Structure formats: structure tokens, C-alpha cells
Image (cartoon, rainbow, N blue to C red; front, side):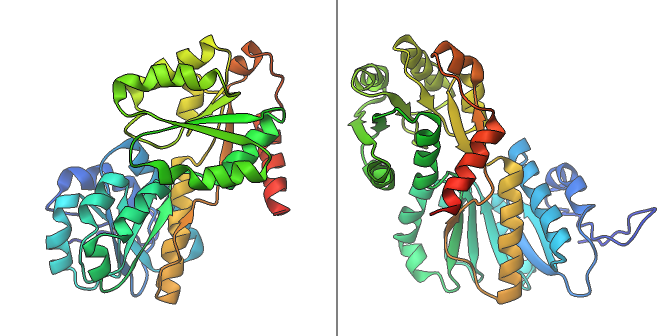
Length: 326
């Protein structure tokens, strides 16, 4: 590793990874924001070079700088973890970004591990794995998806007349909807779920479910929803004039009515806070959902469904107000 001084300003850490020069070049702007400290604490982050991971890491670095944390983020590719842990014995924490890295790297390592930007439904399977039971230093998670109560509150605020909410599941993912069912019941909403046993039955099951429900809530079930099936689901719902509740701003842009979501910057800032607390306290927070969130609404879809909805920021204010009373 080389320590370089940035011209024309204060001192900064710039870490050059000779093993992964392509990744280093991709993340150069990230390191330019990380200040020198007397005793920096190394935090290895398993990331890829996608735009989303870049935005998460940049926001995490900004948050750590703002908090004055001594943490130093060291992004690497997944296949470099073993060698970096061997060469960098001072590593305090390993962070994985995304489900794939969490599944592949939830192994016995000599430092704590924080899985960030994963669905909440994935974490129980990581906890129950033999590697988890053997992990000497513990692990935690920062969930990508929104808590069930927040999702249901958003639906209730946006669609107060809604009585029946449809949800689809694939085999083996039924546990994912248990918190949703409880939150819906508390809000006076009946949740009706249908299992899709095979991918080719997705659209027939969507059409059948929407005959008996007022809206469809999409869950982070990779067995059902992807870029190829989403448009078909949205079209099936639109034909029946039923709104779809999505997972992100991208879903809303594609035609979902609304989504409560956390953008990469929100995830990154929450991740930065979690890392700073770990460095300060020496222990990981319990698993949690991202605290920063936003609401995205497709007002064109709303008008086509005969809905006159408040602006996004007003809906966000109402949702935050509802949460503050709980």
C-alpha cells in the first residue's frame, strides 16, 4: 500500500491496491475524501464496481469524515478477502455490500462482519448456517428493504380506502411476509397471499390475485421479480386498474404507483454511522433497517387510476409523523 499526499490541500489517505488496480481507479474519488488520522482503523469493504456500490461507499466515506471517525474504508473485490486479511492483520471489521457477497463470504474469519444492503429475509439463513455458529467475533446486518410497519403505513396513508392487499410468494419464502401480515392486520388491512410454484405461473397468479384485492405489494423475492418479469406484472395490474407498490424509485419509474425506499446515499450514510459506532464502542449494532428513507410516487399512474395524491414530500412528512407517534 502507498500513502500519497493530495496536491493543493490537506493530507489525505489514498490507498493504492496493487492487486486490484481497476477497482482502485474506480474508487479514487472515495479516498480523496478520507482524512489522515494518527491511527486509522482499517475496515475492509467487499464491493463491486457498480454505480450503486460506488454511491454507497462515497456516502459512507462522507459520513465517516463528518463524524470525525478514524475508520478507513478499504474496498476490495471478493476474491481478495483472504489474502488481505492475511496481509492486513490490523483489520477491525469486514463489510459486505449486497446479497451475493453476504452469501459467499459469511464464513469463519477472525474479525466481525457487517452485511450491508441485503434483504431482511436473507439474514435468518445466514444466522442459521454452520459458519455463523462458528463465527468467533459476531456479525450483524443493515437491511436494504423497508420494515413492514413502514411499508404498510405508507400504503394506508396513500390509499386510505384500501381493504385487501395482495402479495405473491415463491416456495420457501413464506416467512418473508409474516411481518407484513401482522402490520397489515394492525392497520385494518386484510392481506391475501398466493404462492407461485413455478415462474411461468407468475402472471396468471397476478391476474387471479388482483381480482380479489385492491393492490399488489411487490416483495424482494428474486425468484419472482426481475427486470424481465416486472413489466409484465405492471401491465397485468394496469389492465385491471389496480396499483402496484414497488421496492424502489426504479420500480416507480417503471410504472408502480409508489415505493418507500432508501437510495444508495441513504444506505451509505447509515452504513458510515454504523461503522463509526463500531469503531467507538468495539461492538456491532443489532441488525436493523436503514433509517433514512424517501417516498417516490408515479403521479401519472395515480392520475390514470383516478387518484389525486399529495406531493412526495408531503407523503413523506405524513409517514414520518405517523412513525413518531408509534
